Length: 381
Image 1 (cartoon, rainbow, N blue to C red):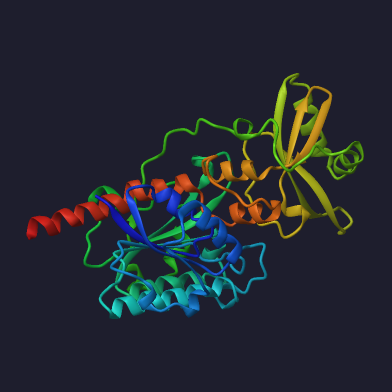
Image 2: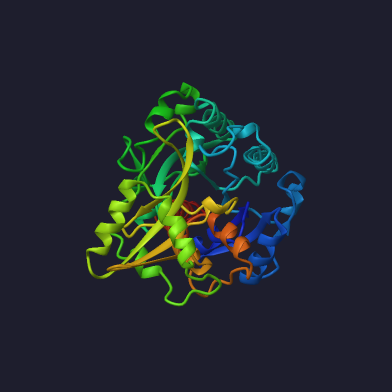
């Protein structure tokens, strides 16, 4: 069966990539013109409308969609952000999006399912009040729903836990295999405490989504690293000295241990601000050799750009991660067309949703629920 969807805050269309060929996009939206150019290069010009979500009308949305996917901006909900939460200019765009969903409810065109995706800071923003506000809005719109925290590291070699809120219209019935009587590890470990703080009215609409444990991931960071990356060069000796000087004793010990393996070892490095023993803020170069990338972020400054370390015995080289490597870490195929500009490509990938995670949710919750309910309607007719 082919399913239909709207893609909000679409970026480069990574939710679309994850949903796959069994889904038909009816409408896509993002306000960023540069991201829109990449979306069109990969998906065509038919569905995307580049406009602030607050300026959209229901007349812009064709048909009756099975799904509305919304990876709304995370900056105000992130632990690294300013703490504005849903009152912020960026994460606050959830509200005009939801106003649009409520207008579709009035028109009897409410999407059968809605998925919201954001950072895990959503759960604790403003002492949980922002998460409760989202849940209350969903409950009032006539959906049953539940939340999952899924770390992309289960599917790709990138540490990237994200919150997914999966909503199903009340007239649909989730299949038994999709739900659990109780919270499950690891999907709900970080959800239980915020859930307990919700009102009983909200809890009455709550479901614990059930996902099977995925197969063990077979690829690591070293498998995705390019031999001859485009647009990035190895650091000069002076840059390497500067980088090594920022390492703590612990991180220098990690580097020494990697060198003693007498084989090629690939690591990832971020520059982070830490407080030293005197209480002074210092920038540190922190490395990991677990064949896993740190979480990709948007390149707001030099510290946000991840560095690749290449160690082989006494030889230590470093360079910025390439944009194709960031795309691979998001689960995008090498056929995906990236912007030529480094920062634009890094921003596009670092701001997206991991493709295999979308596919997993679609395969184990969205598609079974939609197909079972379509079969019920067909049998009833």
